[in-house]
Amino acid sequence: MQVINSIKELQKIISNLKHKGKIIGFVPTMGALHQGHLSLIRNSKKQCDVTVCSIFVNPTQFNDKDDYNKYPRNFDYDLKLLEQIQCDITFLPSEKEMYPEPDHREFEFGHIAELMEGAHRPGHFNGVAQIVSKLFEAVPANKAFFGQKDFQQYVIIKDMVRQLSLDIEIIPCPIVREESGLAMSSRNERLSVSERKIAASISKILTWSKESYPQYTVPELKKAVIDKFSKIKELDLEYFEIVEDKNLELITNWNTNQKIVACIAIFCGNVRLIDNIVFNL
Ligand code: AMP
Image (cartoon, helix red, strand yellow):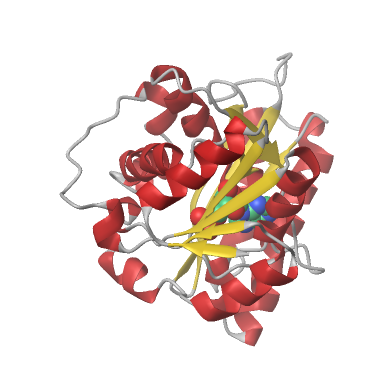
């Protein structure tokens, strides 16, 4: 596996590979890798000739400095995992490499960035679009792989690619969960043993909502879910929203021919977790 720190060097390598007709797959991450990330790499390896993974904890997408400072960083271990899984190239840039000067670009996503994560983490998606557009320039791949765990982020990235007319295919990959059902996340490392057990009820309640939804109206279901979480004192619900998958319009009744996705953000202690489930699959 090649580990590259420089954008110029990486662009040269990718351009040579593309010249030889190789299909390039790209998996952007913030490190602290787990099986969720590795599943994206496996998908890329299946679909592409060469897989590039990037590790960069992007400061501009953190609206909370404390969250940025506490974000788990474990680059040596990450590199070992990537070596084991036979990732071809890892891009590990410094902050100076990605932001030689401050990025003042303002992206306009309208409604899809105004609810859920967008409402609760001001500036988050602008920071995501800044870094992902820079990474797509550094890694001019054919396909980029994103997890559906960050479902709203996937919708935003697709829209960014459309707005900037980028020639890259965005491939969604399913959520990987722990045995308990808890969606894998780098932030899970910050949960205590007992918090981890309690956090498993997030996916349990989401699964209950998927199994029960037709028996309720939309407001009734939302209330039932909110009531269930209010009984678990260790969990502090930030939002539970039910949306259509393409444009993130809030659902008011179940009569839609689009996918219905229930999305949640919740604090377990001081760790903020997100998850989602598709109802009608
Ligand atoms: P992150 O390092 O958290 O920025 O995530 C990098 C990529 O991994 C994003 O596309 C995430 O959606 C994806 N990802 C994170 N957790 C999971 C998971 N449990 N299952 C599938 N994909 C995931």
